[in-house]
Image (cartoon, rainbow, N blue to C red):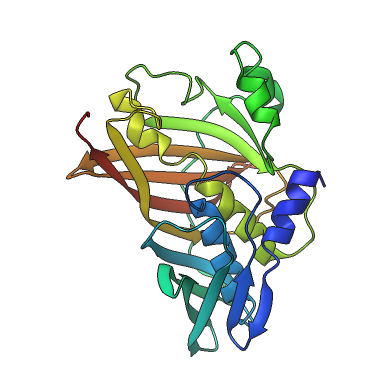
Length: 283
């Protein structure tokens, strides 16, 4: 396990401070607001710590306010339902006495049923692709910026890097990702790490057909909600293909979809995110 991944695992190891209340620490990074994937993953861990049987199969979350990266986040878990097959939890993340995020998540005891899945796209295998650091070597200052941050998730992009190519592109993106090292055999932790990683690049497909970058002063973007469905067991420390697209953007909101496939071509996780895509006036 790399130092970066070790820190992510510790970031997700929430402190229980009261029955159904947990506290999450913050990374020591210079951010204007808390990374959404962190809040999603910590909230999932908080919910899972109160569940006695079954594995997470879905989560539906709303980002209500920007998180303050300088103070811890409290997670309050409401045990809505404990059934024989399904267990439901509601989680509210709180800072400065106000809710910044809420999520409802469900856990299911695995049982047999009908099965089908969309085939995995034909793409290069991850071992045939350069590392992200190697892709940045020809860009002035990029490697220094990359090395200055922790990278618990290894990413290998298929095609152009979204933040270096500002041309008009199709609203699609594909990359392989995995944790930067081996994880313990805890299905909840693997689901949380995949949840953390899912928010790292999904929004990029919304921006692709407009040639907009995150540092554009005329653009304001933020995650509004995030939904995930966990279909089959998987490991977040094995390579997963992240196949994403954006079918629509309208009314200052854009929609993005993502699908995670394992190396065997199984569709293991699906997700949808809506993001704010506000155009602001130049000053």
